[in-house]
Image (cartoon, rainbow, N blue to C red):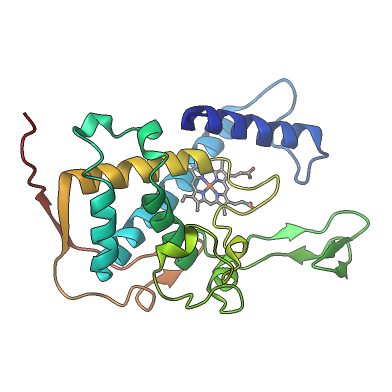
Length: 247
Ligand code: HEM
């Protein structure tokens, strides 16, 4: 199945879930009318949800790649050799790039773009959460940052090891990293986010050699956690990649 079709199916599935299941939050829509202010609010949500999150993933991925030259080299071997021209780099052709996907997964595990645990209200009648009964009305959440950086879930969680996402990994609890969250309110744009991350990183690496300008920063120490991250600066130099003309 091509990536665009997967994205469409996923969006239909999540939208259906929202309509079939009883609402967990009150809906801003009535059946007959959507006001301009509602449209504006949703447009604004999309811009916030869909821009800073993918920008963070790109920035932190580039930072980790520049801090790990061998991993950057492995990725460079995967991408430029596979494509003859930049226009060949598209959703379908990047979907199968296993190492690129693993690099992004590892960046998302180490630095979830939405680092705070979003609150959910326990519905009427209470709920069992991880085996514990929680009364209705209580607010629960999982902190994605803690879950994906806990040594209980990942071996050497602070090291950038994309290989852990390839093949049969019995050492790590990979499911503990859920940067897009889970359930019916999970990220609606995750397939779009994947398309964007695959294509933009592939094109960047296909076209340029990337090098850091100035000293390496301690990324985590210099980040500020708000609802989203305030990231450190990432000055880089892009040098057009030399490639021999194919005859
Ligand atoms: C790496 C990129 C992204 C990450 C890590 C991410 C993560 C998340 C997370 C954690 C949530 C909250 C889920 C919850 O409430 O439990 C969310 C919601 C959402 N995201 Fe993303 N997101 C990303 C990219 C995008 C993109 C590109 C879009 C498209 C515009 C998007 C649209 C949305 C929307 C509309 C929601 C609200 C869903 C709902 O409340 O039903 N996201 N995202």
